[in-house]
Image (cartoon, rainbow, N blue to C red; front, side, top):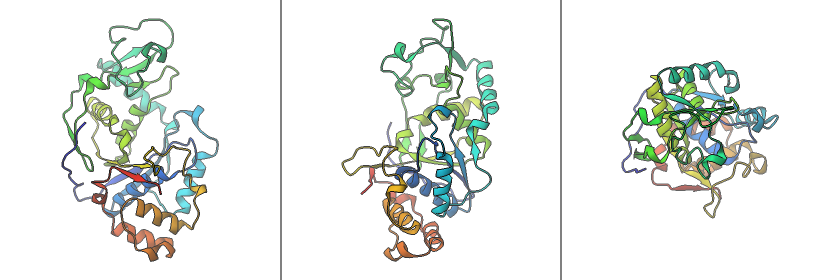
Length: 302
């Protein structure tokens, strides 16, 4: 992957979204992503949607979804329309899988993690089952990513990005246990909800190749992407999902949002840390500058 120059999002209405997984409490990294996406959509007079990525119910922490919604409300976020839950959208995902399979763009795969060794979802599946499964029993479904070749795309922060498809291989779109995979679900949902702008962490940048390939194969629109620098521990390690939970942070909602705005290099005036929350959000929306993050490699949590 390479990145050089950057283009901004064109003026006009936008639809952004925040899509947390209810596997724990809202933490600082997720809050930074939510804030950036929210401000970008609101600055351009657009909609901001909320979606729970709760496909894997075994990993879901009881009460986590309600806790995330409660934290967002407490911190002054507001969203358009009802919250969408992926666990209620299986029919849409199955239709997409069936459409790909009918066109020869998806195939069953009997490989297990043991078969693949160190290879994982971002490790480059070697295409072992393209010509047929090797054993009977439950199978996953994989997408033939190489049949929808793509050129570079321009990320709003990272600039021109080019991914070597041979390094990724064919992603799973439906797992052996019948659950639909993130790569498929996020593409179907973004299109169904009319999402025009996706903001997420830079660790998901490689997934953009698979998702853009799926969008092309399914005839779906491609949103604009902005992959944000990751929030890291002071020593540079990636912030774990269990770390920096909001419950561990002191201060009022205004103080917490002020800290996140500072983390995002928005330079909020110090006095706004003690201002009413609505006043702080008004300032933040009017002064949002995605470009402040363009030369930032990572965001130290402290």
